[in-house]
Length: 110
Image (cartoon, rainbow, N blue to C red):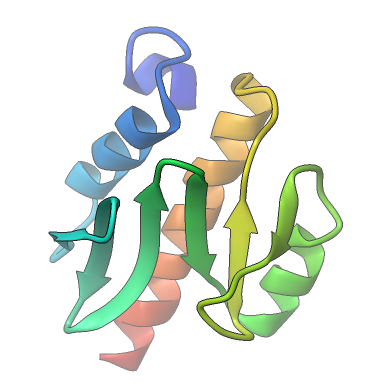
């Protein structure tokens, strides 16, 4: 669970950094105002001052867009933008699940 991972609710970035550390072959690099994560050269998630973006399979992205604080990302049609107004346990759990789902998808493409 996200709150167990960072010893409390933590920030969205802290949770994603912790999740990235548990997954195989994840690479991170600085990006405009934040960080991008990739596997095998395929970027699958990013965080910046406004929130996080995740590259998901189309069915997962469609479902994610029906949840609070999500919108289409300018990164492309498979990307969602997650801008939580309240960073509670539920928001952190969604971010963790989407990060992991995006990683699995990218790993399958490498």
